[in-house]
Length: 78
Image 1: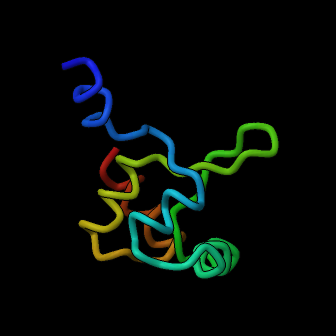
Image 2 (image 1 turned 90 degrees about the vertical axis):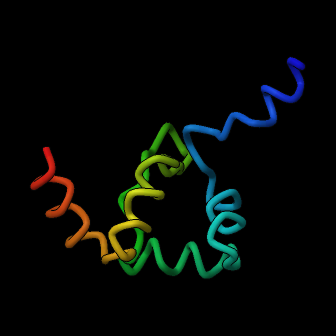
């Protein structure tokens, strides 16, 4: 039971590789989208770059707008 519960938990923070798998895109595409501002702003922890899984889901529900538009949408919701 414990192992099944652990598998059901989705990570709170996604690596670029995790995000690529989630969006069914290549890792290079994720890196290019991030550099072009087409993804929500990542969280930087030291040299690690991660995206909040809940934010990615909300971003997708909003139609996957560019980073600037997404920041305005999030600010309006707060």
